[in-house]
Length: 187
Image (cartoon, rainbow, N blue to C red; front, top):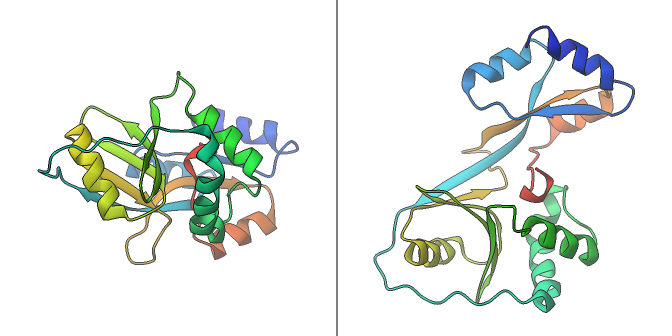
């Protein structure tokens, strides 16, 4: 790896403004720092245990509802940058994200929506609108699993999720100044 990373960075230097990596352990954060990577993307999380209530039926996803969901999405995430500024791009991304090869679902309840990734031990919610506690309760009841909800980063409990090696001073300065949040549709 120590041999490949500098060569990979030099090979893309003229083609892009930076390279991102997602370290899977604390040791890898330290390893990538040696090559000029800096933590640039953050999240906050909350875990909800299984709710003992009876399951409620989730509302079926209707493609024609995307306009209403887009408005809620934009209100919630626009201040974090990295959002789709048009309903058409949002709609296209939702459809791509829900492609049968992805282990994802688009959950809709009376208050909003959520993008889910189901694992054997928990439900991961990456983007959502509405009330988080109610959403987590409904999901834990429906799937009988704990629910981990990820938020845009909050100063008091943010944790690193991705590192950036920037080839641009302005991109480096921007990343240092802001708590960047990487939406699930951009992974």
